[in-house]
Length: 377
Ligand SMILES: NC(=O)c1ccc[n+]([C@@H]2O[C@H](COP(=O)([O-])OP(=O)(O)OC[C@H]3O[C@@H](n4cnc5c(N)ncnc54)[C@H](O)[C@@H]3O)[C@@H](O)[C@H]2O)c1
Image (tube, rainbow, N blue to C red; front, side, top):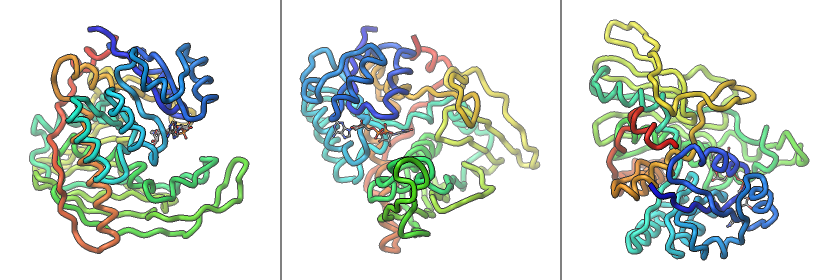
């Protein structure tokens, strides 16, 4: 398979993961990086032996076929639109867009130009999550009737030196961390029919407690405490909670209740983790992890130890899908549906009414160990 030329716009924090991990995958060759801050682009280019260009020059570069959008959430829509207008395929970090309307414009533009748009998160392609998917698909826990997913912590101002944007519309725990949970729910259960939510914020201001702005307060303009109910087309009802107002809790990240048992899925923010199954008699079994390449630890995390991190797998799958003429797993339709799920939860919090979704999608194809191996060099 010939390599596609990859360009990156946005040379901040997460760009190092993409630049470090892209060489693991077939068909990807990073050919240029750009940023509105040329110094940031030059620094990354030097670090990873690639070329720094202005955003305009990268978009006009004939050696670049696919552009990864690693800018900040507020810029995602505008930058992805420019990528498509330049005639290139796009792959964005989450969230794809901040409103359904923006996503529909991108979908129509991509369709008119015959271009692909993909979007992170791709953590649901991780070994542990694909094993959970395989257990579900084998019917071991029967038909899923209910479940809960929760990401609860005390926020970003304790570690992030400039946390302002996390507390503004377009972010908050739903749009910042919800994408990992919603993408995995779609992977496991398919599309959502209807949502309702209660939302609030524990504090009107948050105090930065690190870095040069230590002690400064930032306003909270979006809910930081969201408890949603999701009704899936397959009949399952899921409680999804995302909050930055919680100091400690004992809830699991993800539990699915089936007619034959319970499935415990690890944190969807990561590729690996422990999968557990309980049968009808209540016996809890830790599943022996299968030999899936995207579950193997390849990174040492300062707090969590050995971690599996295969970020870029979704892009590699999209590039292979383009060559093979099949649908990408991290597709525009699924991501757009996910955006509608999350924004509808926020809307329901404002109106107090359930929201029936206007978009739908299919479940992505499962990614078996052999299919995952085929994506690697
Ligand atoms: N940092 C993480 O651990 C992490 C993890 C998962 C996902 N993400 C997502 O990745 C994206 C980037 O996050 P980050 O932490 O790297 O942010 P960052 O602030 O460190 O970097 C963003 C970069 O984009 C550039 N930029 C902003 N607007 C631009 C524009 N219009 N044109 C060109 N360049 C522009 C900025 O100059 C900056 O260098 C976000 O959407 C975030 O949600 C980040």
